[in-house]
Amino acid sequence: MIDALKEEDIVNKVGGRFKLTTLIQKRLAAVNAGARTLVDFKSDNQMEVVVQEILQDKIYLDPSRRVKITGEADGAAAGGPPELDLTNL
Image 1 (tube, rainbow, N blue to C red):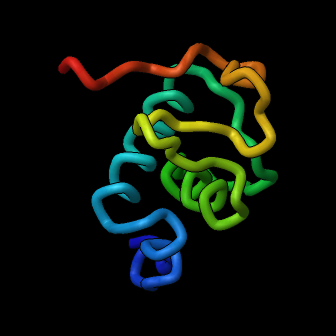
Image 2 (cartoon, rainbow, N blue to C red):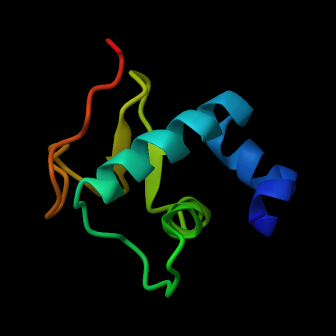
């Protein structure tokens, strides 16, 4: 298990366990679809990479529950595929 997920800091940073789960799931889907990672973290486990992106404040959920990259002006996925809309599944 990823040790950072055992701490309350990451839960509080995102705004709750459900938001954390949503952020991780949506970002994992984007990374698995080919989006570039935003941190220099060597791991074969993509979930560890996504957790590092959260811990380093690289990604967040906007009010409409879409994954946003910190500093991203227009919502484009900085070199990766477009954001996946999983709301209608």
